[in-house]
Length: 354
Image: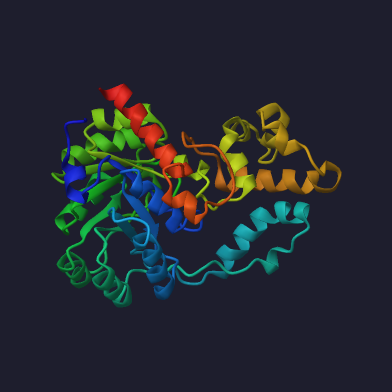
């Protein structure tokens, strides 16, 4: 066992692996599977209505007694900006045109509500072992209430200065979120993107800056990445993309294929034409994705894949294969994809480290 047990003891978990909360890509099923495997399952709550969050937690607790994390945002909601909206719609217009869609009919994004009194009442009622935040921390009076509820509190830092601020405000552990992280950029003390280092440059800086346990996040998808994070002083790792390959993942088939097709992203980056990198035969897209109703759907599917590569990108991954959403039985059984994926990662970690 890796000698730094601070995170294990803090959260009451078996393995120092935290599931990244991935809104719209997962629900309680993946939370249960990772917690049951001995890691810390996480539930993304920033886009959930209060009753829905309560329902998700009820599903988790009906299937596991292991610790889990509820995640919230602490951002300042942006003011409406019609020019900005028009700009991104114009940039994506070629994709809409190719897919035969009207950009003006795009549904509004789901609300992302910052942590507030109602959320805090939910925490006081449900009392999860861990509450995590993104974009800093809520106002001090809410922080005090979260701590008074007996919850451990963590948040993301993208610089050493942010890590020191979080620890000073009472964070029990700090997530060092490197530039490679696939989720929201957690920057909050500045809006200068040039200050953002990569994961393995950031981790030792944060470890030196704070006394709290540090959780490395960003681009970690296998035992080598975990071992590297530990060697740099991290007490644990947070992983998201690696778990998107599991059956409990709610992402689409096209998204799964984009994740599996890493050469496509490399081609895309090298090409002066933002769509020329989507030659999926050259890039090695699995043959099954080029079969089927090619005459009817080939152009539409290729366009959608290019959109995914351009907007979503393709992260690394070491999780289980498979597709489709998990069932209750999947989430409860040891054969569930996320459980197997976590166990493989953990087993590989032991082989590398021990």
